[in-house]
Length: 328
Image 1 (cartoon, rainbow, N blue to C red):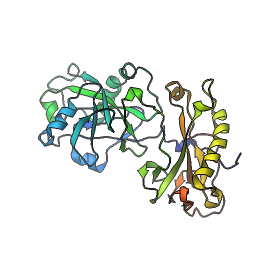
Image 2: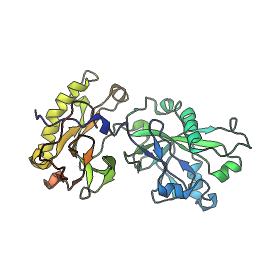
Image 3: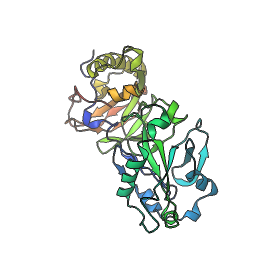
Image 4: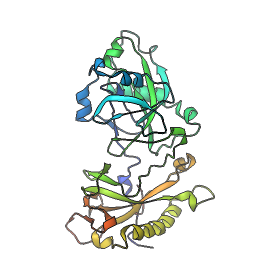
C-alpha cells in the first residue's frame, strides 16, 4: 500500500464544516442548515426580506404554499421563477411539513431576526424528518433540514405558516440539484467522478470546472458495503481497504500518473456509524494538493485525468504531509 495515500486532515472535513447558503424566493426563502453555520451572500442580502411579494410570479407564490411531498426548484440567479416540479426531476428543495407558529407569534409580534429564524427552524423542522423519510436522516449526509418562511410583508399580513424541507448544499453553500424523493435517495455525501470542488481560502467550495483552480478532484465513488458485508467497519478497516482501492482507482483514472511527483495527494472519505445506520455507505476517492504545513489545500489547475494537473508551488519539493486521522 502507498505510504502517501492518506486521508486528508480532519480539520478539512467537508461533511462537518459545510456552510449552507440562505436561499431566497425574493426574500420568501431562508434555508437554515440546522447542524452547521449559515451565511448571507451579498446577492441574497440584497434581495432582502421585504423584497416585494408583488414581484413573485404566480408559480412562485404557489411554490411557497406547497404541501408536504412537493419538490421545488428555481434559478440560482433569479429566484422569482421558483416553481413546483415532479420530484423525479432535478430540484433544490423538498417540502416535508407545514407548521403554523401563530400561537407563539401573535399579530403584534415583530418579524423575527435571522437568529430567531434559526431557533424556530431547530424547534419546528427536526422532529418530523424521520417520520417523513421513514428512516433516519444522515447527520453527515448530503441532505440538510431547512426552512421556507413568509416575507416581511406576508408576516405583517398575519401569515405564520412555514414550510420545513430538505435540500443539498455544497461545501461552499450553493444549492445542488437532486433527483428523486428524499426518502428514496442515497444520502451519502459523494460527488460524481470528474467533479472538481473550488478552493475557498484553504478550504473547499462548490463544484467548478476542473480547468479552474480547485481544491480537489473526485476520481472514484466506492461502496463500502460491497466489501464490508457484516456491518459497520471500523475507521481503521475502512482506511486499509480504501488505501488499496483508491490507489487502483487513481491508476485507472490518471493512466498511471505519478501523483507524488506532481505534489498531489490521494485521499478518501470515511463514514461514521450514524451515516452507515442511515444507509450512507458510499465514499469518494479524490486527489488534492496540501499546503506544506498541513493547514489546508492549495490550488490545483487542470484535471488529473489528463495527467496535466499540478499543485501550486508551496516553496518546497517535499511531498505533502500525511495524516492518520480524519477524512473527506
